[in-house]
Amino acid sequence: MAVVLGLDLSTQSATALVLDTKSGKNLATARAAFGPDFPDRGHPEGFIRGGQNGEVHADPLLWLDGLELALTRLAKLTDLSQIEAISVSGQQHGSVYLGAGYQAALADGNPQTSLATKIKPVLSRASSPIWMDGSTVKECAEIAAALGGDQAVCDLTGSVATPRFTGPQIRRFAKNNPQAWAKTERVHLVSSFFASILAGADVAIDTGDGAGMNLMDIRKGDWSPAALQATASDLAKKLPPVRPGSTVAGPISKYFVTRYGFSPRCQVVIGTGDNPSSLVGMGASRPGKVVISLGTSDTIFAAIEGIRTDAAGLGHAFGNPLGGSMSLICVRNGSLAREAIRRECGFKDWDEFSAAINHSPAAQSAVLPMEEDEITPRRSAGRISLGKPVTPQSLPRAAVEGQALNMRLHSRWVGTPTTQLLLTGGASNNPAIAKIFADVFGAPVFRLSVSDSAALGAALRAAEAACGAKMAYLEAVFCAPAPGVVQPDPALRSAYDALEAELAKKLS
Ligand code: ADP
Ligand code: XUL
Image (cartoon, rainbow, N blue to C red; front, side):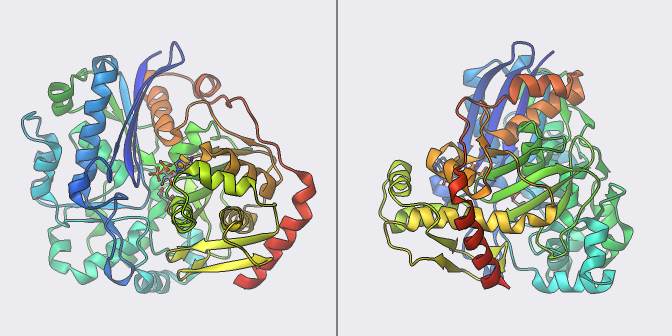
């Protein structure tokens, strides 16, 4: 049994979580928020607003500074030399482009220069497209045409060609910046980039996160030569290999030993995406449990038997980092839309927002708050109103109900009834929001005692892959539901059915 570290590099923050698997204790959690902790960088939500043609990028150097700040804070809370293994969770689909000299930069153990200082000169693309980027509609059509149409891409890669996915993003870069593409020697996902930073060497992409690229053969768990060819020239040699999530990359780099006091024996396990990582952290890696994550994006996902794909092209099949696959639906207008509504209503905090929810009757009206262009459903920014007209007082409830109904509608293709929901992500701690999800899905809602499920999943994967711990034991110890299950109100069922039917009609 061991002390392990899980790192989550998400859209808005870097989180570091240390567990002692023997005592079952969470020894320390530290976080650095890319916006509030780095006000001079000018990216209050961690990404770069105002890109052309739907581009949304982020600064990989800010992510590196965020990692260093989280580790600096962590070192004040716990002894980092006791950590035996680390793994990483990263926001999915985002990509980092590295050019000549990148391997030496990764291996540079000099503690006097920061990670950002080492990596800056070897970036062949200054910024990283992230999952919010919708600029690649044309490239998606080109990839689909080359591979025989949407259904063929979906059968091959688990998803239709999807604008935020890495393959279409790479294609757009290679087409628009051929010189910079020629200079690119390696494309990493956020998860594999940070695993490489920790290992001080190039590290593989896992099958979980690799499935979010439109490049991996979902059944073989390896790059599809046809998809690579349809995407960009020379892509095969610019990608790291794909490996199972249990792969141990090697010992931590000298930089972390000398700068932060890690043991040179600490092992790095390859990373995965934040949603696959949360699947593990929620104890839901075997089929039967449905997870809803209310973070920057709202996602609903579950481990599934075999592979299922969404004929409507909005849902995805990803790899399950512990083997098999998982379904996923991602809604872009999650927490940032709830924040926008909170601001619009003039509420100073979440307590006021929640009070407004509690003072409005349920299942009367719903609003799908697409404050920015949405990906599920694929729609330009705008709101869809359902049921009775909404008032300023009822808007918070109507908006959260609209978000929950939208998820319910778009997860029907998975085909498994939701008998219980596991809720995670920043907004899951809000009891008024949790109650709406219980009522709309007609299922009890559980939350876990350890929040930060993506970082927790990374820590559990590290313990299993590098320290020989058994996942069944780890789940029993760290993934127990917190007291206070939220029960649904069955009397609301028919009203929500009617609102969902109205939403389906308005979207058809
Ligand atoms: P990510 O991992 O995508 O960076 P998190 O899961 O950490 O995001 O969630 C961050 C979001 O959680 C914030 O944008 C904030 O809007 C939301 N949040 C935090 N606390 C509450 C709350 N009590 N009620 C509703 N939303 C909340
Ligand atoms: C999933 C997705 C987002 C990101 C950021 O497909 O795009 O959930 O992983 O959290």
